[in-house]
Image 1: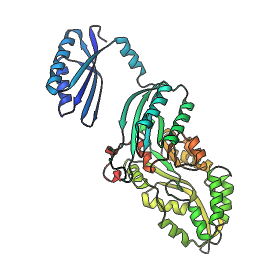
Image 2: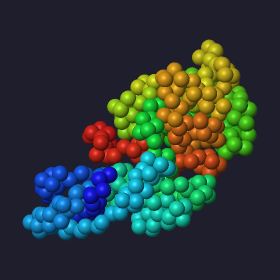
Image 3: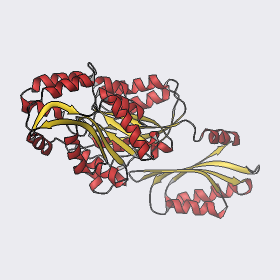
Image 4: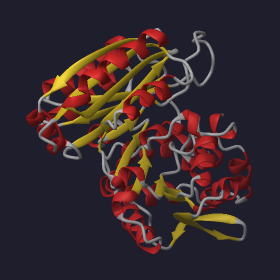
Length: 410
């Protein structure tokens, strides 16, 4: 760095208008000023522009004088702050180190929620460098459907106790009705390529085996076993075998009727459209049944379906299954296998699920998201979505509503 150069922080605030930044840069260009850092934000037509500049001592006074004149003409406020060279070097050394993204999501976000999260970050010694809104502007009429609010914090530093911070954020999430995601800000976060979904109670708002059981007249028995399995109280393989056995004698035509009337989870249409538009590979890894997974595959152009195959004889279910059960262990194996086939680093993978048998794949994936999950799952997942639909996943991936075309805004 030149010994006869000065470092100056320039801060400009006021009403935004076309050409303002060009006018400021025109002044700096006349004196050969170097821009070391720049940041601009515009909130409801109110501008904040920050510049860290390097200028020779010879021209420093002229630069500040001309900027003051220009600011008066533009009707904005301008302030100058000298920066010491050792302060700048310390700042440079911190860049790119221990940077995280904390995403806050809900139907609406209040000052109370943001204050609580900001307090946790401060207590952990983390500094908020930037905050941006990912969702569109929130309508004043709160009765409108599918309202979502999401903001993203860019955070720098090293948490004093990452586990305690995660626990506190999870507690706040439950108490204040919001969701969060805390991710290391690296290239993998920006380059996710494979996303694996559980099916039942994730992509669809039901457990298909329960639907089949109702038609077979054993609904209450099967639901009780399902609940115990999803809570992790009994082994999935054992519970699966018991439930399938209860379906013996059910006509296969029932499956087609159920498939045509599957209750699709809020946000799935939008999520699938956006993921396909941006080139993601999509997989269903389900402890449910291939018949219904293949139905969704056709509906959404899903790339992979791995689920369980029911045995059929003479047009009726035998009460047995064919092949290996897709349980929690198998889901994790399949996620890694598909990533290998698609030449995708495991850090670029995403897994989304709600049950105990989803925990292994949520742990293996670069980003594991518990969706409207059972208590045990939510407590063990690093990210969760409970307040809005499945398209909330898009915000954890860094998508802004403004990136998306009209179909992506549904």
